[in-house]
Amino acid sequence: MTRKPLAFIRTFGCQMNQRDTETIRGLLLEAGYGFTEHAEDADLVLFNTCCVRENPERKVYGQVGQLKEVKAGKPGMVIGICGCMPQQKEELTQMLERLPHVDLFFGTHNIHRLPGLLHKIYATGERIVEIWDEGGEPTEGLPALRESRFKAWVTIMYGCNNFCSYCIVPYVRGRERSRSPQDILREVEELADRGIKEITLLGQNVNSYGQDLKSELDFADLLEELNQVRGIRRIRFTTSHPKDISDKLILQLAQLDKVCEHLHLPVQAGSNDVLRRMNRGYSRERYLQLVERVRQHVPDISLTSDIMVGFPGETEADFADTLSLVEEVEYDSAFTFIYSPRKGTPAAKMPDQVPEEAKKERIYRLIDLQNRISLKRNQELVGHELEVLVEGTSKNDTQLLTGKTRTAKTVLFPGTEDLVGQLVNVGIREAQTWSLTGEIV
Ligand code: 5AD
Ligand code: SF4
Image (tube, rainbow, N blue to C red; front, side, top):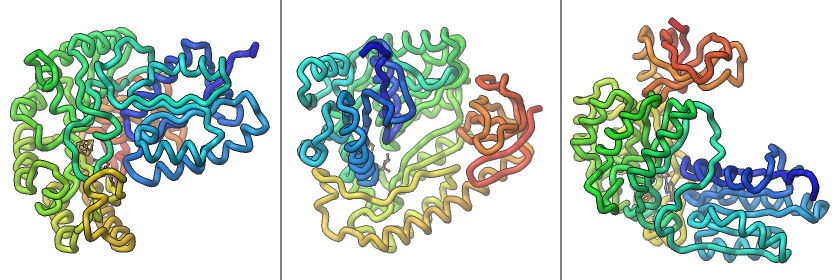
């Protein structure tokens, strides 16, 4: 091949996966690849997959299936599947059978091996399957091709130890492994040097950061260290497990100037019986107390959540508890999910699986309630002046800029493209369910 080979990458799932894709792109760039937005034009097509629910898995089969013909007319094309799906043994076996035109399978723990694996494929022409069961020490120093010039994700820990009974993540991402504070600090300083203004610290459960390290430093201490990095203006983090939020962290949330007034605090359900069977490690009452404590210290905090309907055995009364909790907390917004049984998790084997119809009906009621609350919370901001990090022009109207407040709300306002990447103050004039509109002041 004399011209530069082109790669196409499709990413499914959470921010962790999106961050992994940035590493994959960095590795491919170093290996001499260019990138294309069209799978048909690519020499290498990669699917970075998610297995947290059934839907994204089905899409992978569909989209990879569609490439079969394309590849038939393009013999040199290499197709690979990576990320969380191949980490599940049964799923991998199924993919190997049902997707014979896929040349490469690798997992979440051996991304750094990609250049070598590709080399092997080109050298032998054989199908390569390499999945590691355990992550071991986090691999440092990998390149990354970041999506944004002014905001960046920074992974601070990998894996999860919680084993919520519905969740596949601990099985495919392994046990909790924290990066060293020195490595994280160095990365954030480098990002700041390159003009990055906002960082989002990533981990399945950032509140247990450092528990596997020898040092005494915990997540609240890490925030304090990072708050001192010059050039960084905003610090976000996700996801927080309610059972692990310390008072020390709440104080840091209130005190550290760069740490944004936003807490993503997935509740999952409002019924104590369901919470117990989910193995969440907190009760409805403890969760509500936590919310109260957080609001006492940071009154203007925006709270968001993940909420699930249709967990096995969820009765109408259990679901009513979820609705009443949502009403009580008044989240700024929430991701809502229909429970999806995952093979190998305890919940998949529980009796009384909820019928599809009931699940759908419940999620519509939940979304309806949350939308009303989101609108109300947004309306409370009309007349306020908020700091916005300008992210780009609006997709629907190029006269408008779009950006995010410290509380993670989307704001639309008239302005010119030179403001992209800047912090501006916007007076809020109107509120919608999903966004705010205003004018620069
Ligand atoms: N079914 C539906 N939703 C799930 N989540 C995790 N596992 C499942 C599942 N089996 C949701 C949880 C979690 C979010 C990332 O995905 O709400 O917080
Ligand atoms: Fe899954 Fe629970 Fe771990 Fe989140 S905390 S990744 S829901 S097991």
